[in-house]
Image (cartoon, rainbow, N blue to C red; front, side):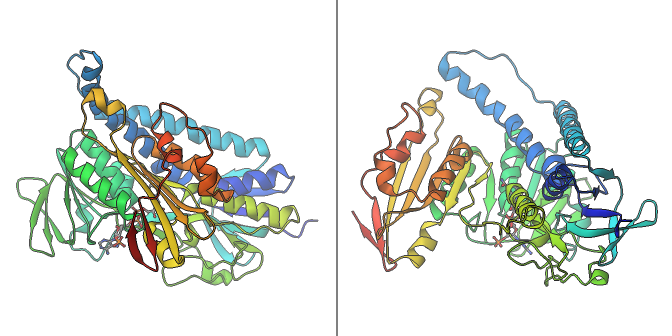
Length: 464
Ligand code: NDP
């Protein structure tokens, strides 16, 4: 008789959990996976996927305007939020179905229940109040939007969770935060015709990105009509007697909007999970502490994805899951590689980026070369839209390695994926120079910036 009910029990049916359960089951292991909400997790159900669908939806207004420059006469147009939500929900249902079928097809048992640890090998299924045991356990419960409960009036505000299901499109919205979610949703709502204001506590949005990307996007968003308030934050939210909400800010401003959305980061989802009963240690943010192999303080319990607060990105969670499988079930110890992760902000224009910012590279290397181009993309010539693309390569002067690549503009996310491969392979600037351009594209600029725009030596900028 087996000592445990399962070889592997996975808590959480998101990107990391599903991948580890599916692969382990495919290797013939007896696997169960528990999910309290919907399979697919944040990314599929209320994150990356519906967000990208909203991004597409929000771009049609500009497409219709741009069409005139190419000879089209477009009739009267209007946008129907309810129809978009219905279509988005249908697509999310379809994707959830695929996730479920893939798990079942691999032989994993799907449990529709919250699961909590009782001890280091025992899990309680809350729905049925039963317990099961497992030889190994994976915690992949992801993160939750920080509700910012200490903010007076935060109960009147929404987070990205609710933004995907608003009954009607607000006329105006105030979004707090300057990270991925705040910036992406500011562009989404603006594109759908909502009067949009973004308020951020720092000097410039997107604090961890290259300064040119940050300033360039800020300017582009303002030029579209998005109001951006920096070095200020909401201190209190109240309901206005006439309907809508009023925010009072630290700098003394009063901002009125139909909806206020808080996008102030995401917290690891570990509350009430019974980690202490199993002896699993967490840090001060509640994130599960893991070693290089995603192993927690309990040797047979692992944690993957956002719940560990390493890098909160879907592909990272999936990669960590695959490394876990290699390590534990294929006898091939593999630590996840968190270097040079390409990423995109689906703002409008997009940011695509991989590697070091100019600022970080200048601190790390004695001398860097910066190749920078700012230009009007071809599509904007006939459309007449005033928009610029910015491309930037950061090169370590001593070995010519490209250590950072940053793009602001159309399809920057698609470019970042390919740049990511090159940088991962250790590409040098000379490799870029001997690569033939694909013409006419915007991306060709990446291989035709022959002379550095400037250098930074020991932190000092040297022109030419
Ligand atoms: P981010 O960490 O990107 O941004 C959080 C923002 O909130 C920052 O601007 C931060 O300011 C600000 N902030 C934090 N605490 C406070 C506070 N107490 N008062 C005022 N401002 C505050 O988180 P998001 O919520 O935008 O996104 C969560 C994660 O989800 C991201 O880290 C990202 O990894 C992932 N994501 C990825 C996407 C993609 O790949 N395209 C899209 C959406 C999300 P400061 O900068 O000053 O710290």
